[in-house]
Length: 498
Ligand code: NAD
Ligand code: 6OD
Image 1: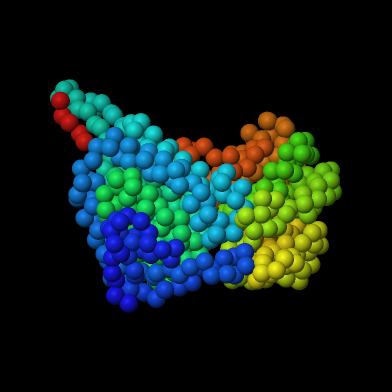
Image 2: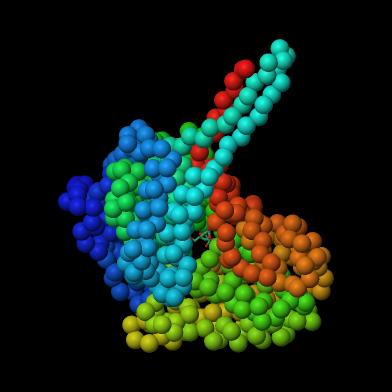
């Protein structure tokens, strides 16, 4: 199918998801593919796959925009534009909410409290950060005693390839696009094939906000052999920011090696939560229910390994079981629903594979472990039961591999040292959680946990100025606040002899 631009009205012409290149919605030269609801398998619409000619055009238009009006804007102009994008998301809140919940099946309550407001907040916070970002200055002595001064300037890195996952689509995409644009870059975004909608809808918002054509582009498709690989392989892409699975990160890193291009990776996790007997039990149970089951367990920061100090183990596990059993599985529009489906039947198979493996490995199933009976058409959806296991070794596959489903393994520990050693016994290092009312213990342990993000008596409490990223197989680099600017800008030092 030949590429053809739709009428340049700035509005996406139909609910099918087109590519957004140079400010226009365009049909890609690849095949169209289906976007299906994870709730009941129904067809939501078709998605237009970008071919290599489309990727070429997206990268070329992004490159041209750097040298055009966008490249000539002052920081204050970009700040205004970013603020208008945030306002635009807020003004079309319900459309974003409908699109995100249709693609993911997540409860509207969750998306309306986290995904959509955070999509807007990302633009506001990075508008603020770029407005207030300072620079480095060093006065130096010279042999002739007249001295010299040094100051550093930040320039945009260029065309940024943004490869996104499906679990928090708008939130995680804007977490990268907002700082990239704040710093003056242009972007080509490849949303997940599972969740093409909100990135597409954002094309309408950026046009309304007066973003010059070519600054924000969206190409749809899959990973290997499709838009994802074509984009990361493209020599016109100066740097790649990626959130997704560790093995995908390895593949992207191989592509980025050609041309020695920079990468920022937010990858998988197998995060531990340490629950001490001196914790506030109500808070620890409530927090762990969220860290294990929020978004149907599809959060990279989620805790699939829970270690509980022995005197509290039985009570904690019983309370966690009670909480898991009280979760109300349902579609996004069911106001009572507190847990949606997994993203797809393929992911359901993967998670159910781990449920079967846990049984084979000899786990005690505290609750769940199967597929729930859902009403009517929902039986065709990607549902699984929230699941808790006990009784497995730390070396079991279920305790070592990221499952990315609504499940966790709970095991007892007897000392602080043991808890720490077991928490750190993983190839990943994204997040760690400590539940204790003993502040000395909390501060003693926090720096020893081998993870990029540590929460004490809370979970997913995010100040967007703080460093975010993982250690080991959980990622490369830090994003957030000024740390994002480290990735999205090149710093040059200017030295002046006085
Ligand atoms: P994924 O790696 O399968 O896919 C992510 C994106 O990469 C998709 O857009 C996909 O099309 C693309 N892709 C796949 N193969 C590619 C290739 N060879 N070249 C270029 N692009 C390619 O991840 P997912 O299943 O969408 O997301 C779940 C994973 O993401 C989990 O492992 C989770 O832990 C991780 N994740 C991490 C963070 C974090 O901040 N650390 C946040 C969210 C999700
Ligand atoms: O809150 C964020 O900025 C962030 N990157 C969250 C990641 C969640 C992972 O699933």
